[in-house]
Length: 469
Image (cartoon, rainbow, N blue to C red):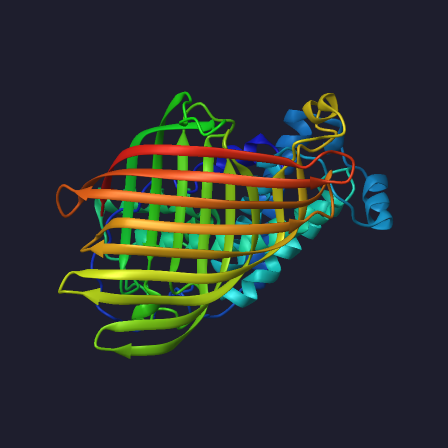
């Protein structure tokens, strides 16, 4: 997957959601060719879904082959036969390509089906099918295991997040310039859905929305500020170059309010854009709740067991890691007075396949030329702990800790261990604005067979103003 996909991927969350018009519940009606339910499945249209998937395969394929003209993109019948015979391996693409562009491509494949009447579970095979098709026939290089996992699991997580995000933006009752803005923003968020709407004449049609278009709660937060990233040495303060950053967070639905009656009925999306880093998007995390079970709901005290699917991507000078997996754990909320609450989370995580930066590599020249990776691959396990004190829409204090361990199956290291500690303080200025500061510390241990163990401590300090919508 080449830079064209990375450029397209940058549009995923570049436009914040246009405020949605409140909607009364209505019966799903309209053309059978367009699903009018966010979570339900109307008539499925395999031909339309397959054709759309091929379109999103052919666009990067054509650009890579006839504009980029790189050797690995000049496929032939011979290269296709060779790929079908020699089996799967591991590739050496640069980190943003494997950890971000491939999951985004999988999201396009997934949403080609999602926009043609397929639900969450039935859309998932399209992400895998699109990946298999590309690995065998899109390039001359050997089909790679990491691409298959990243494109499939990452694509499902990002794809459903994109689909539901675009559902917030779209409004069948809107007219005029508002309708134009909504359709354009939704097209940036979910391109396959925009193609489907355009080809079926839904872009300008006024009509009822899906009755489950909006969950019980939607909140977007934009943080704008200054940060510094550097390594702590001998207990000295973190001192590094200052960088401008923008963080975007979307809270879609509330598990404790009963929104998880289908996969991704509640989800969380976070993304960071900053200057002076190796990639335009320096961080992205998407978490979608698959199922939830109430343990206690008495006197406003909520406790729930939850199962979630997640994708994460970090690519800045302090920390490089990415992957996808599943988590299960306990989430709780305890009211304190009329508007305050203590929120806690405790999760155990299984990483199906994750990537972590390596301190050693076969050869620096090989890495620079794309013939070797500067990161290791492997499955892992971890945990997540969070405690937060909320007052109204603002979190006044938040403390989090996440430890992870990876067993390397492709790379230089034998094992990686890292943990992330975070502390956030916010001072509300109004109901929609707040000043905040956040300190994050990344600690990492790497164990090698042919190199000494390495230890690193990196940090990120942020000061910002937050706007909540």
